[in-house]
Image (cartoon, rainbow, N blue to C red; front, side):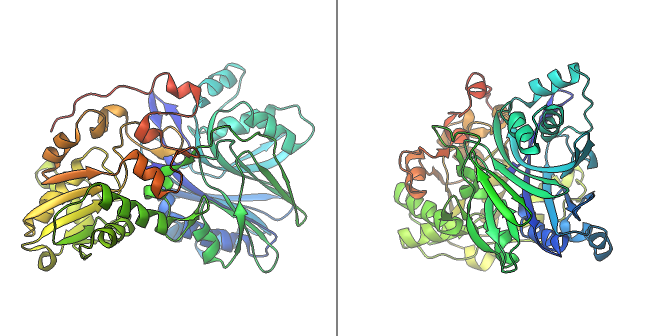
Length: 477
């Protein structure tokens, strides 16, 4: 699964994932933004960018690739100033290219500003068509650019007022950072879909990031998470906050951040991601027990849940799969005859652990089912006599339109197959998912009244999406 902003190009919907980071009031703002983006690299590996302000001018550097490769010392030296924002991005559907790398940057009649966005605006295509009809020229496929055009065209007297007017026209998910010559602004959508946390350094600098792991790396104190609908302005060392957008009656914090997306060492929506994932595994063991000799995880996201499953079931935990950390995204697809080796580049089985054992293997989700099938076959080839697949979330049956990349519903195996059919397809001896009710218990929200679970339930929180979310078709098994 992946996340960030989306658009349409040649009829193809693009959904991406990303992470954002910003700092103001520090002499090494760009260096610290580099570190913050490094901590958020898991949220996007395709491109990265930093825009810095010295109080008079904005300077930008955006490039395809990984943070550590892009931001060398000479590059950082060319980004002076005490304020900066940064962005990491990963697109999966035709949106690859430097034109879509963020933060986006613009000169307009009111000056300069830059924007970094985590989320997805579901009405962006309609707004873009309207703006183009009025003469707007778009330089990227990112829906973030819609916000820029709306802001630049606003007649409101202040930058903040223009931003509020622009965002009142959009629908969907956004956690946004904006940088002008003299201020840093952060805003979160009224549903609170995507996370955004505020921190402060000992030197007095304010920091904002998608996850607390970025604050930990630069030794910033975690102050609090921004409220849904909140707008924060930091100018001349002073932080001002307001609530221009009334929080939605039904909050929509993304449950998949806890299931898979965020780093385990982050604190998200007030809870430790690691502890939540462990509780997911414990609840899974209660709901979907199995007679087995050991519990293993599909690394890395499945590890905390597997530990929880082991603790609740009493079945010993061991390491049966090893993940390679050296598989680059530039890997060239092999010819069809050897394409099945792809999963083995990322994972390898430990024969001495698995041989002759009945194994419970815990993973966070099943999307198309093809990877799960290869993993189960790998475990059996390594000597496991039984493989019981357990998933620490409910079946993923619906696409996400709020910033986590999922395929269309026609490609989601759980949308068209029963659990028994999926188990047969992936060649597992048994398959068990966590229930939607169990998911709510694990995140300590039994009524699921503050989380978005649309990818599991099909209950979208914006009217535009509830009308037509796509239909499912049978997949070849």
